[in-house]
Image (cartoon, rainbow, N blue to C red):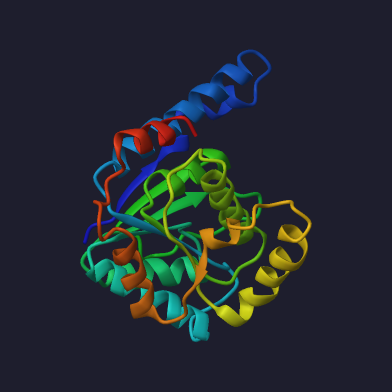
Length: 242
């Protein structure tokens, strides 16, 4: 499958971004361009699943193999798979999906320390702005699959949980893979955050732990058993107002 790459930052004059006059205006235009081009390009990829995980876990690690297997099964089941486009478990997600039926999508980000894009992207989008990229993960996802990772992975997980908890986004399956890795985090949320009333007693139910790849795919289909994957009118309105 031919790789389609859309380098959004190239649409903006880089000198104008860092000049004094019109700097903020150019940045606003750059943000608008990222939103518009990414939205148009990804509009036809539903249903899709966003997968997250560490950039530091290489091939041969059990988590890499698990991510690759889950992504392949999702792709063969008809789900486009969206990752951050980088190395590690992002690569594993794209690698598995690239070998399947549905597209492997990478939402790449320009970082001060260069994050190389992986080679398994059927659709590749480059972002300069983190929050424009993060919105695309949420907006086009019918489910989140979150593997072990660091600050970036935790940021994506808690972002989705917050949007769902506050009603700013529709309810979707949020699946944690790697029960032994996540258990301490879940215990802390239960023993400290929930116990002290900082989240609701039912908020932990927004996510679930599933380690078996086939069970991950089955859980997503079960969630949508009595409804379609497309957002309802009210849910689309929520997504437009993120």
